[in-house]
Length: 467
Image 1: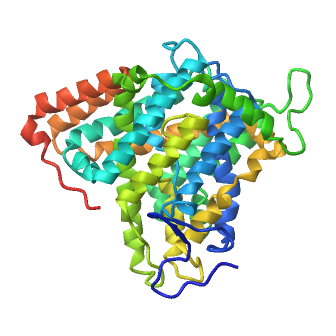
Image 2: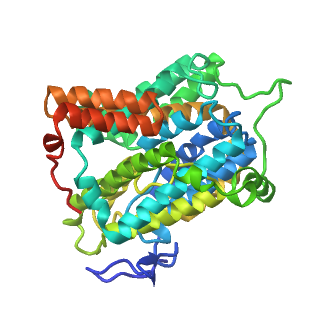
């Protein structure tokens, strides 16, 4: 039973510095709809990195990749549980395609060098977050940035994501799962973005409930049809089933993961790596997108706060900057993968906030709902072999869904930013530069095109962000 909150006060917790620890079942309760969704959706989405990590680019075993994803998920869930952030956190998803574009190339000598550079990006992101958060300069930096440049960065992420989904590589192979991936993408796009379907949601409760499950319906349908068509196979080369029973012992894969990826074992990045122009450029792009997520999360909550006078929600951009910076440092020191420690999983945040806004009977506290969705900070199902091995053949579909829907969402957001023909052209030009060139060169081309084609004064005509 969670501690009782008096009307109008913040949910009880343990204050430590600017943060608030809320221990599950002591300071927060449980909501079963969020728990059941989190068991499936959060697990499948959290494991989407596994096929990337098992590729020759990173060289991890299946067990090591699962532990890697588990560390990432636990750090993500620490945002609301340990630091007291009022958001449903997730990856800096629009930045993931740009991270993959930089690291899934033959420009590195092997997995060890990739992990060292990945650590450098993550530490740079942490440094930017903490410095700009403490000084309060984050808002000023974003306010001074041309809107066309923001549009170029977001559209660049869309192009990079869709390029990887439709053209493929040695991780995502759309030609090997053409029907499954098409069905998964089509169903998810219909349920999440289709205007006709949105109209029917108001009159068809079953459709609204189905759509609220996000990626899950398309993922399951693709799995069933993929098995029927032979695109998804649950037997190995000997004909034996790949599904294993029991629980994974996390100690051995955790230690071997550290030996392959942690800077404590492979060495810390040099200053030359930390201040490499492409590393800094990618880190800055990640920060720009992350800051936008913080603002989005606040705005989503502002729309619901008026209906929940019984719970005080404390916003602090400085706290969010620092806590997210700490999470990025922790990730960099154990399982470095840039852009996996963000402030917002927008789709989940919307679902939880909507239920919270329905009143205390639906959800006693916002933190109860978020904590329940993230399985109280410990995704134990990652250690269950029947689940992880059953999901293993479908993980390329989970990754394709994540990238494809990210590309679609980023595209329509970016296309709403330009106000005239010149800005539309500049956004597209900058986006292509970011999608096809190294991060620093792409960022410089995008910035130069904004100022040279729009003019410095016009480019700075930027509405301030409310924090």
